[in-house]
Image (cartoon, rainbow, N blue to C red; front, side, top):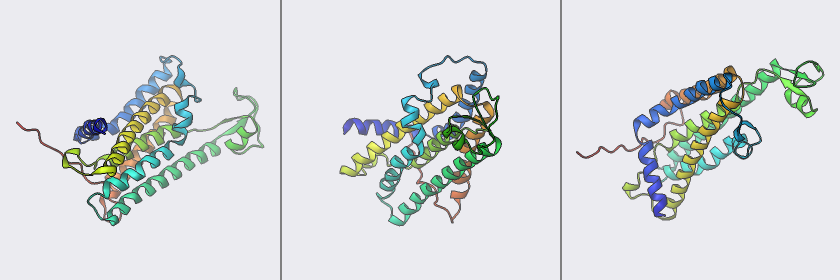
Length: 257
């Protein structure tokens, strides 16, 4: 696992830099604005990613929160149990329950708004209104076309998932500390590298959404929701006593002169 240790060391050094964690959230509004502008000006040619049937969208983005929790839950449990009591570990794991609740409430709200503001049409050219279908699900199940105010769920969940992962990875034990040992170290290293890969994938697919799908307003609202919910939890509520609390602070090493 020497190669994995080397990768972990490089990634850990990058994320322990305060400027990396401080600037990372700004990446999403920047991509959203630039991508939306490119889409409106029709400057990006069609590609494999312009189809919603691409393999990354089907097998990863559509179940993105599942992938996030699948990798993040064992990582949070293992990384926080090395030198801390299980009460602390359970408290940190409760932050994932909070995040899951936020994901569910926000996505259901987006669906509700789209149902409330939409209509069912016979074809995509929105000429014939079909009043007997009151929800997008019923309309599409019947083979028709639904047009409503569709806040970008992808812009929300991809930005929110990436921000939560980066926050929870911040306390990764530095390899130079000599902990953890054995199998736990190997599993933790694999999870850490996998989480970094998922973050990179979420950023890539967020960019794909920005340049190929939705209107600017839909993407801005989705991205704004992701940033707002992350900000409220990790920068306000989690600072309070009655909360899951913040992840352990990363170790910062001063360079020798």
